[in-house]
Image (cartoon, rainbow, N blue to C red; front, top):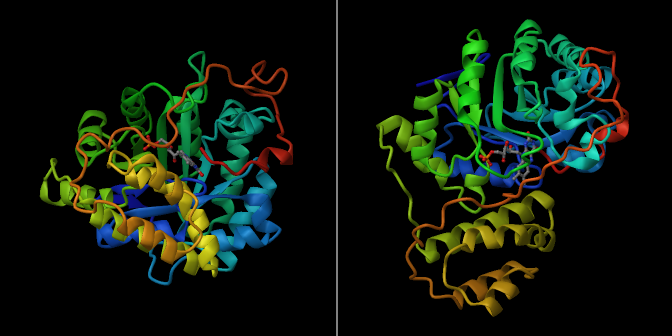
Length: 376
Ligand SMILES: Cc1cc2nc3c(=O)[nH]c(=O)nc-3n(C[C@H](O)[C@H](O)[C@H](O)COP(=O)(O)O)c2cc1C
């Protein structure tokens, strides 16, 4: 089973979801180690304005380890001209092999200005952004990732899908939730099937609530989608990519890595080391790693004191020493692999005044809708 993204054959058809603050080069390296390099691994989102201004932090975020192919960058922008410039920069400077555009961010700071998942409601603005992106991308495939819409009364994904096809977008990923749902409830996989029926011309990728390889195979079967995008299921579990590859290649739906705490601890140290190398500073790497500790250790019996200490480590030696105090022979805690990361819902989406009045007006979104970098 192969997913075709322009010139790139992704086999098996599994994609690591872009996650701000998570899917940087170190985390992608870890996931690729478990998948044997198979699959597609998308960078965390990069704001177009920061990219064209060559902001130092942003330039680090678009770093790829020399072995990563294809190099996949997710961009987030609200202004067609700036998006076009960012895409042109990527092409001219050979910074990536694939560009994904993010239209799914639900955070109020962004939707309040009309950005993120509020943007596709303005069909003409969406079209202009896609046109500029595709028009400047040369041979690079441009894909988009979106939610179902703003809320149940303002569903946008089918219109957005058709616009994307008309503008030459290569593939579409759909997170089966509205912005109002945030991360609560369950993802609507029927919507993924409906999008596939609506845009049969291009690959549709399904996203939302894949916690195991079995879920991934089931999503493909139930929705007819061409590939899957896996986000929170990989938090603290980069080995899920090994399961995913096995499930698709060997039909092993039930493939299920169950590392002991000793094996998990080894991955934790490797993750922290990779972050330190990437940030060129061990302490900063270990500090950045802190947010992953609770995900890796979920379900293991650790004790609250050690758990607290693990969450405030600042050196690899300290991390190693604390891990060695644990009962490392503990088996994988069955049932620990369900929902993790963000899981809460929200009911109201904050929008600019009058935003819903006319889906076809010539809306513009102010540049400060790009200020938030917390994702989708
Ligand atoms: C911490 C975090 C950061 C995220 N950042 C981004 C992002 O930068 N770009 C994006 O398109 N989606 C982002 N998302 C959304 C995910 O890509 C994905 O659509 C969502 O988590 C649903 O998939 P899942 O159920 O497999 O997690 C983020 C999600 C989380 C939990």
